[in-house]
Length: 532
Image (cartoon, rainbow, N blue to C red; front, side, top):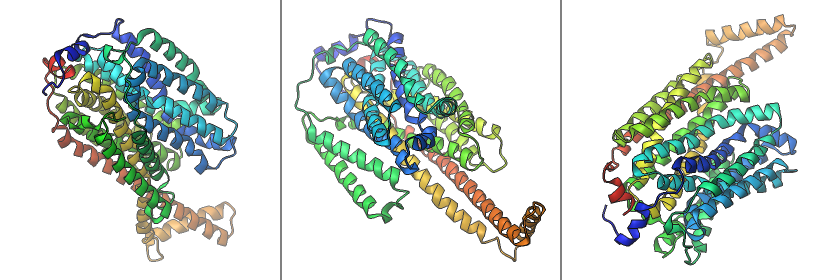
């Protein structure tokens, strides 16, 4: 890649290193990032308790999640631009302070509107932390240790959503849903103290940027992301494009996206520098990250739902079944952080996607008779796959960019992963509902008076209810109801299995995509790529 900067401008980014041990920097930024990512999933299992305590409906309580995701998504790509204006360290400290204060407001909320406003503030504070942490880590460690740095980052990003439901379920059952927000207070204050003590701005960020504010670009981005998230979250409830408001909202989102792209490509100081997508590795990396987010978030959304609604697990039990994924993820993150120095990252990613596809295919064999062990093993394999995908994917996606571009690029990269996750959750939710209906129609067609198996089952159920003291007529009605519930359960299981297999196939589709990455040379990376 040919350098476009003068030797004088390139020298500072190459030679600069933080004055403290980079591991202290890593602990400081990851403490804050882990808290933010954990909070994106820890509230999921507490929604019924929140709705009941604040006298809200289930539909209203889902805005606790949606409001956070929308404001978080808007801040992700804007973080790099704001950091150029006020400094990366200052923005990170402001973000931690806003997030921590908003967590306190969430805990003391007296009604649903107050909680939603507090969650919006949480999303604003938390949205900038992921790309800021990523860019700080990449600049604090030398290029030879970028894999290790991304392994540390990946452990926070990947492990936190896994343990979130378990932790949230335990806190909600043992104490109160308010404590899932109160626990952020000591963590946030400690992170604020450590960031102030250990994090430094590189030379090129120490002089505030004085360009004009791209109000139009920011407004179009907020409109695009907000309307898109609204369609994805509420589309299934409204039967998607059958509802006029969904069609109008989707049209507004599309027009806002087109306007945003045109604005950012033509403005001299855009809030999001889309030109960075000209780099082949970054363009491919964002595409793969989007598909990876689709598979990862789709799986993590479906599995707890299956365990609780079909198998009857409690929130805590389903969380414990999913948590072993974190064990595999932690092991593979550290292993991949070392191996990426010696093995072509494309091969590591391909291996990871094979494992991810195999684990989701294993989940595609689920039935009503499976035990917890049948869920834990695929989860461990899935977690083990994460490290071999996340570490080399992040390293190869960002390693060819100049240091000045990493903050902006990290925001785009994380945004695309989250958008993939939002689309994944919306897609699997829709496929579950429609797949269950299709399988139910197919199964119900066999439950007729001419089917001896169905009639034998019905008679057996009637006899069981007669033994319980029911009259012949009541026993017949109860037997029909039980038979119908059995058909519904079997249809739901088949729909879940279809979705898991679909995600497995989608994982394998990523393998040819990772082969399109350009190989990053280990020896010359620091001189020819990072500082160019």
